[in-house]
Length: 320
Length: 261
Image 1 (cartoon, each protein chain N blue to C red):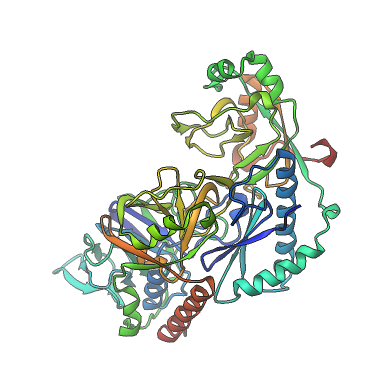
Image 2: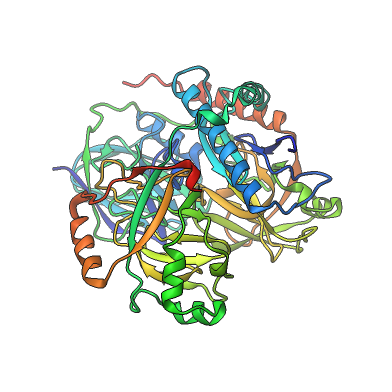
């Protein structure tokens, strides 16, 4: 059986795909790659359908060995490079954002990332893992997906199936690479519980600098900045939650909810980061400063459609 | 009754809230019986929309999540807009017939309330002024309703708990609560589907996994189902745990009597 063997897992690397759609009413998190733009582009570079599972790598420090020939590609952190060390001979470096060819015995290292906090590495094969609720993606809090529901560890062995026989040599074009330029202003749609805040608190949300803290994982990322106070308190009747929701708990410090967020919750959500901007937020490292601006729900929808149109234009999906 | 209110959740969610809170009203307190009714109505609308979406009547609805007095529609903005979705849902809301409710399932679940599983029983006794036997009697006396799901796969928030057992959460949440633990907090009780952190007051343990990937239906109960508990001793508990191996499910639900709630 063909295998990838994990040599070093890095601080927070996991198998991710498109996630689980339609099970949140049962308490099952949506999951999936927190940066779908990186997943879609990396998969395109290895001639795989956009929803295919690959490695989601926070901060880097990830390496593995292949016992078979295949293509790989790194996206999400386009200025970083990979080191490929063959079984015999000299190591070489390869850039992100293009198809890279591996031979049996090759070792691949994604060094500590400098261009981004997050990268996605795709392979021209499928992981031979049992899907749970239609996905092999890992949700560590629910302990589902991946190898055993957890993050990857050194020594893990991942069986492969359906290796693509002849992936195309591809490279991300400038128009597409622009999606991965660092962003510091993020657009919000107000609601669902903006009415739990006086207008001066909404003003504070959009006029302040917010810093990302080290408290970030697949469930959410916590910001620090001026405290936002509620009219009454932080508690609401528990309701459903979307990715990108900006939750304001009792301490007034926002938490932006990510792919593995709880499906329902009882804290006020003042606004939501729009789907177009959320991937760029996941690429920012701790201590970076960001700002928010408000758009309407209709404007946000328009932006989502524009991005989808751009992706289908720059990533023509004719496979093989 | 107040009109339901729509709220935006970014460009991928639309919340329909039946509690009537919102601009100008703030966070209103709703009596428990009204809350249960509104929660059922929201849930039933969600079910109806799920059936319509599954039948292919429209596209772009990606998930439907019932909350307390609300239902969240997740949607794909590339396929459908919030404005279109509002129109479709509003149309169905008018047709919603609460008498046409699908019969709920009633799960009679065993709980071992013995000391080794009832980690917070001492606390619960001192806060409620009840004896251990009274705590067990009250916890097993009612038919409860799975109001909503959340937190972990298969975890349901059960409402209808006797007033004497209403308690605040523990001031210090535990970093580790074992799978199957039965907890009390506020006016609710829960069973933990997995080992996890948690702040509820633990009074026993339930041997049947709420979530087991080996089962054909990995999740045991869902929102709208009814649950009642009965006490078992440690030997019976062990026997039931053993009978759940390899995805085996040693119990099955009964048809619920709606009037029991």
